Length: 400
Ligand code: 9MR
Image (cartoon, rainbow, N blue to C red):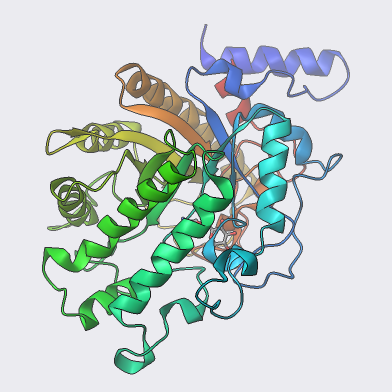
């Protein structure tokens, strides 16, 4: 039967009962790999920890009802360095007691009570990390490489002493590579401090090797021998049209360097922030093939932040803030078809042993980061549930 017919039957069945069809079919049960979701917490966004957002962990909240569809949870913001680190540098022996675990702990205990696995996001990232972490006695008031390494090790140790093996997968380093220059990420203090230290060759990625070594060491010391360690980024799945040297080329240099230097990396996370019509499942599938084995080492691929914007660069909509109802209607149907094609491809890669998890970056459209990116205050519709927390066509095609 055609996909559209199935969707129609489900919708008609709902109308016949005089109500919109309910999302009674559990999404993750329909797929052989775990399907996760990023949970918006009680506090979030851009360093302002006092901002309240829709709290999905609150029983009775409309988002909470949708968590049943996912068997893996990640904190959208609450495990990032800025969310757990103190406002100023802790004294040498005081790291763990100065951290704030309240929000991260809520997610962990919710997951444990509800038999969900956890994905940890993120240990080392240039963004959403307090300023003090990068400040010190080096060039222009930046930390020296020794200061930086001590802090990285302390942070990683602190997190694993706290969570040990409770969190199944960790994003150890995120967004190391630049999206335009074909080198290390230019707006990153990690890059600047490596440059200050004269590490300009392949050793520009030395800190990444160290981060993986510390993550493995402290995971193992704290009962987390089964914790899997990931390197994550966006735009590493395919070559951008017309580009001579792409982000993927530099990303490959990085991964080869990690493998050649025996970094204990288990896999690569493709963030998966896609746009309708701009990325095709075939291209992404080729990207998965490309990185599932690097220099003879097997890498597990995870799609760790999936969402699909309905604004398309191919259709010159990069700066648009809205679309007509007619176009939107058409887009939501196309979005559903895209989601299905992606999931079918993910299933194929899962069966080939190359992919073992897909996680969607948010529960319902109204709370997606894409409503403010790349344009502030635009209405996007990238997820499986709409602004009223109702299932979209994209949900129906994934559970049929
Ligand atoms: O979804 C997150 C949003 O709430 C934060 O404001 C933002 C801050 O940069 O981070 C978003 O999540 C990002 C993730 O941590 C890393 N990959 C890109 C995601 C979207 O920006």
